[in-house]
Amino acid sequence: MQDDLNTRICAAVDAAFDHQLTFLSDLTAHPSTRGNEQSAQDFMADELEKRGYALDRWQIDIAEIQHLPGFSPVLDPYEDAVNVVGTHRSTTQQGRSLILNGHIDVVPAGPLGMWDSPPFEPRIEGGWLYGRGGGDMKAGLASNLFALDALAACGFAPGADVYFQSVVEEECTGNGALACLARGYRADAALIPEPFSEHLAIAQLGVIWFQVHLKGLPTHVAYASQGANAIEAAFPLIRALHEMEHRWNAAENRPDDYAHMDHALNLNIGKIEGGDWTSSVPAWSVFDVRMAIFPGQSIDAAKAEIEKVILDAARENAFLSNSLPEIVYHGFHAEGYALSQDSSANALSAINALETAHHDVTGEALVREAITATTDARFFGLYANTPALVYGPRAEAIHGFNERVEIESIRRVTKATALFIADWCGTEER
Image (cartoon, rainbow, N blue to C red; front, side, top):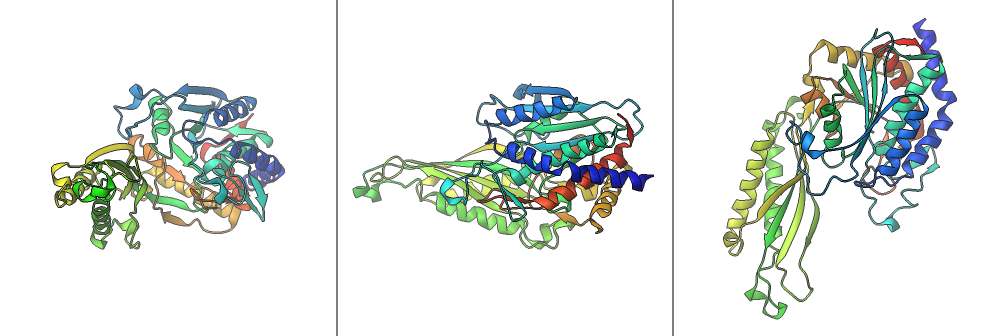
């Protein structure tokens, strides 16, 4: 009986797959960078309402979440930071509840001339869908929705409550997912289809964002020796931070999930600006830094070492020693999360259900992988006692030019997700 249902579910995914690709193309066409997610969220809300889900759409209120563990500080106003959740309420409550989570926000496209085609005009070519956010992670949102559609096409609904979440802020804070927790959304497991090549992420890194503000001494460049260049003053500080990065990656500091990786923790100088005039010694500069930390590594201890490294390097500079840098934290204050460390019956059962679904679709064992990024899984795993499974399609050049997601991988993930829902939640007649 179960084999017959699985066959019917997979056939339903195939039957609707052209529609799913059209949906994904339409969603990818929305340029939903931070602060501009509203049209994409309108699109998602309409699709959820068409399907009969109870819709919850709300503006994130910083005051409601800033006291919670996992909150990340923000510099910009939170106007138009809107979450969308569609809820299926089971009539039988025979199975286990589930959160299907995905983020609608995408990173900026960068110089448009460096794309082969416009980033928000998605195209399909050679078995891939191209476009900013198609892989990271609108394909995952589509697979979550169309997995539920496949059950409906077979005359079934999940036999437990399911919460379909389309959240903002994943790319910079995670506060969108945190706002869902603050609103009371809880379940027995969460599935997040981030684009990690149909592997199960068993561990993910934490991330800290910060800015370093430097002051110089301006003068006409003809008398440069009498001034202090605030842009060049950043260079030794950046060098000291990279030396810290090397120390943190040392073998003795790596947890078991990352023991095989020589350089899991990456420091990135993501942005630098400063100065006011080409022929003036710059009076100011600011550079933005992203630094990763291992699961179990204390954010407070990491911040203390970051500050010491920067200030020690500044004190070696004749000018900076009397004008110390200011360090401003904003964006990610994200702890690492290791699903591998969750030995609860719920976690083991959820992993087993996903392994079975993956094998039924692909004929292959589910690969378990520690990833060097962060995802919203940490909120569920660390702060809600909910095992969070990160499992999504294969994508390439995410955050880069010509981002693309593999079409057949989307199909497989949608099928595996549908089979996982049917197993985990059970089924009931619609």
